[in-house]
Length: 360
Image (cartoon, rainbow, N blue to C red; front, top):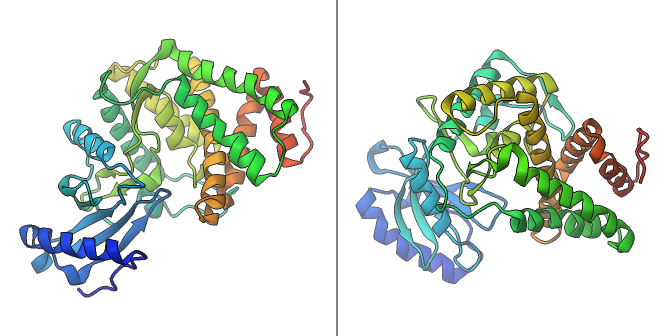
C-alpha cells in the first residue's frame, strides 16, 4: 500500500531516518512507500508502521530522539518479557546513536479500543461478560510477568522514586495548573501526608516486591489476531510493590469501572496470584487496602504528569482526564480515616466544600 509519509520537523533527522531505513529495508523485506504514523505517546517517542513485501504483515518503527529518550531500558525489558513468555515487541534492529528501532507488530487494536468505553472523564463503564473475559486475560498476563520477578535486574522502586513522583502533584498540578502558592501552610500540610503514603506503600504486605510495569492498563495492551494480549509501553518498569500494576489496571487513566467490577477483578487477581505463590498475603482485606493506598500515590502522580504534559509539553488533551483521578483520590481518602486530612486539602485545591467532617 501507499501511505502518506510521517512529518519530520527536523530535516537532519528526516535525512538520518531515510538513510537508516534504506539500510534495514532490504534485510527485513520492508516497503518504504507504506510508511505511516501508527501512534504517539506521552513521551517524546512516536511509532510508525511499515508493511512487509508481498503482504507478509507489518512492522513497527520506533522514532525516539536519543537526546530526549533512552531506549536501552525498553530493549532490556522487552527481553525480560519475552523470557517470561509474554507477547511483547521483539527488537529486530536498533541504531542506538540515532534512536531508530525496528520492532515486531502486535496489531493495531488496543484493549481499550476493543472495549469502546463511554467518553468523558467521569463516565463509568458498565461491565459485560466480554469485558470480564478480557480483564481476566489481562490478569493472567500480569501474573505471568510477576512470576518472572527477581531482584537486582530492574531499578528499585524505592522511597526516593516515590517521593519524586509525588512531588509532581504539588509542583505541576497545584502550583502551575491550579495557580496556588506552595507556601509553608499548604506545603507543610501535604508533606506529612505524602510521607504516610510512601511508608504505607513501601511497607505493605511486608514490603513484597515484584517486576512492575508501571502503566499496565488497556491502552497498553494489544489484542492480537489470535486473541492473546500483547504488552506495550514497558520501558519504565521497576522492581517494586506487588500492588502497583493491579491498581493501575483497575483504576485506569482513561477508563472508569463501577466498584463492584473493580473489586471482582481484584479479588480474582489476588486468588490467582496467591495460588501461583506471589507475595500477596493471605488476607484479601489487607491486600485491597494496600492496593488502594498504592493507587492513591499513582492518582496524585498522574495528576501532576497530566498537568506537566499540558503546560510543558503542549499536550492539553491530558487535562481532560484529571477529574477522573481527583475522583479516584477522593474516593480512597473517604474510605480511610487517616486520609481524611488529605481529602480536605484536595477539596481546598479544587475549590469545593468537603462533605465530611474531617479537619486539621
